[in-house]
Image 1 (cartoon, rainbow, N blue to C red):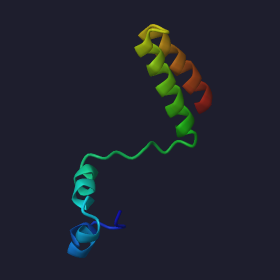
Image 2 (cartoon, one colour; image 1 turned 135 degrees about the vertical axis):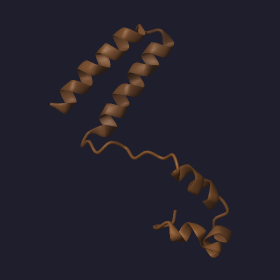
Image 3 (cartoon, rainbow, N blue to C red; image 1 turned 90 degrees about the vertical axis):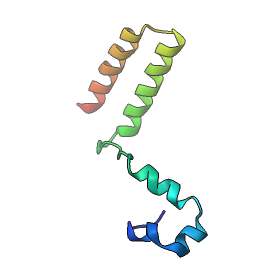
Length: 76
């Protein structure tokens, strides 16, 4: 990926990286991850609890309540 927006328009860069316009389009809706020291752990908890809800291992309410408890502990 180019390091600045001007490079996204550079024809030499586009020829060298044909998917560059696709990345440029994705940047229009991209969101940065939250600036939280242990975000990757929080993300893992969310993924696990969503999977538990989807597979029926837990009810949606129970999975989300458990996620809240675990994430709250990380944020303290």
